[in-house]
Amino acid sequence: MSKVATSKQQEVQRIVEALSIAIAQHRLKPGTRLVEAQIVDVLDANRNHVQSALQRMALQHIVTIEPNRGAMVAQPEAREAREIFTARRAIESAIIACITPENMAAHLAELEAQQLAEVNATKLDDRREIVRELSQFHLLLGKVSGNQVLSEILANLMVRSSLIVALYQRNDIPSCQCDEHSAIVSSLKEGDLARAQAIMIAHLNELEQQLDLNDTSPDSLSLRQALTLSS
Image (cartoon, rainbow, N blue to C red):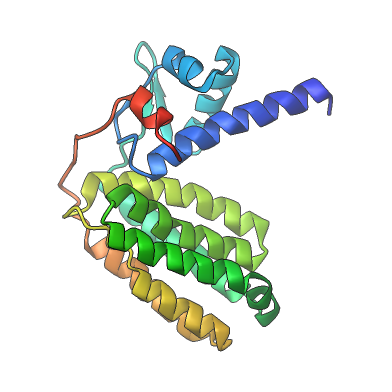
């Protein structure tokens, strides 16, 4: 692959990551229009690269692109919401099954630091910070597993889950709780994968049960505000 092609891929990935983080942290809400000119300006990006990034995200079902309307953050339906959680239960169980004692030893300090960050975020009572830290735990388990394919699938599911929570969560309190995360880590430390999987399944079930699949939340930041906030 040429240096030019590699550089383009890296730039497109940078744009995808910036938009995905803004969506995952609920700074960009479902239905928000993604105006190419604004993304170019805020991210100091090439318009062709922005178009490629939006097309990639459309293939991942994070963005929808409609003729004469352009791109917007996806608005998943109730059926898709249920299917996302079904997929997460399968993928996150598989991720836990891949975690060995050696994996835990190699990443123990990182896991402990993550749990401390969750507790601190909860004390600050900052919804976006709480959402970020609690979501990061699930992504970190993917990293600990060492399975790149499962980690990539989970990363997509986590962004799509963020859209679902933004649309359907019954209240303004993140339902993903750090106490359950601690129980999962404790089970993994003991090498009890079955218990860790059971806690994860119950954890995801609870998150899904706290959704009101007829409710929407239209409140959102502008595209410029969402992309200029620190990630």
